[in-house]
Length: 259
Image 1 (cartoon, rainbow, N blue to C red):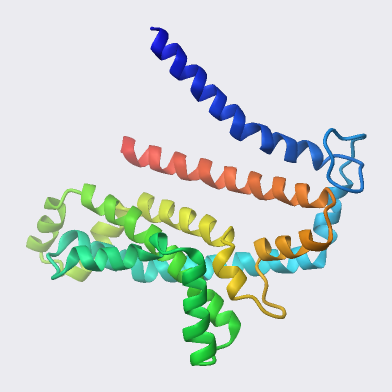
Image 2 (cartoon, rainbow, N blue to C red):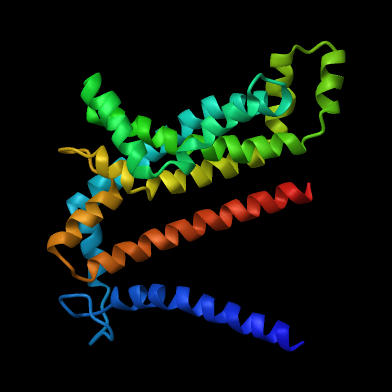
């Protein structure tokens, strides 16, 4: 009994340790101070207005949405069939292939960013925007392979066999039977990949250029010369967006497990 109480107390301490800095960020976003200070002297919403008036933030926000969406969509187009093949077929060297697909989550982001920059931008002189999209595609792909692959492995293989015996080709079965039954996994992988792409810093930092700057990089550049509460306000907006997306993912996976 005492052991359980001790573990619960420790868990609450860890939770408080993680929560307090986030609460301080939220509080400082409403301060009237010209710089980030805690405790705050007054209360205002002006810093949130300045976030949306900052052209650098808005331009990089739109670019981040575009790159994250395109990178995630490309990862789905390639990753879903790849995940199905790895889950259903005895491909030679399947474990090595799977490890290769998942390698961007193991290799540091700085290495991925530098490799793409050196190979695509420097060696083949591709535009920096295309290199940025390729880098974020590599970030997104492992999440699609992992989440969709595990969803396919839980799918009863017999329904595919029944479809084949009724005259459907394997391609028709994939689109008419498999895809409708793994939509929750596809949706969840899309959300996870999108969040990680949107918030990524190392790859975005390496593949930034004039007019091509992702929001996290824009925020870091802003902090170098400014340390006003608009930084806290933007952080709060990003946290709220991430929380909403994670809530949607949890609900989606929860509904999938019930069905």
